[in-house]
Image (cartoon, helix red, strand yellow):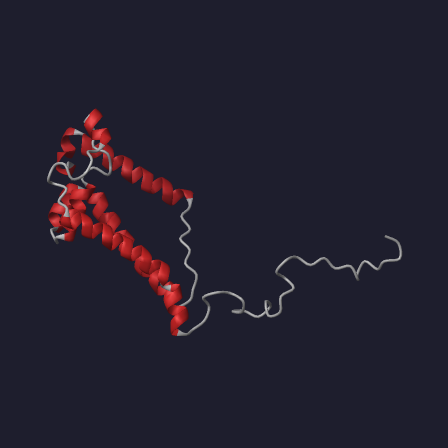
Length: 167
């Protein structure tokens, strides 16, 4: 391309030539401060809470201690080994009814999971209400730690001295 000044040929990428994109807080959805913007930011955490409350309400109403309401754990049925989730429904049922000792007896890791979920959900709602981004960056160390905790829990609950962890 002879005779063409290289400075005059500018390549623009899609979305970068819009007016107002250089100002912070413009052209981004959900960054307003009005009540509508706050409600919009809280819609997803509210939906997640509604789903969890609905699941807990169902498990609280339909007793997993009565046979025939829920499927049997296939690992327990075919091998006799308790998986980390065995007793989770009975734990949730006891938790809904306020019997924390029975919930811990049925599945202590599940109760820990309920509490961690409540803390993370609260953190999510506070950040969303303030208009700040929410990021949970779990690195390999965190994921391996959770996996190791579940593995130790599973092994201990299946050993003779871990009978107190049986559901």
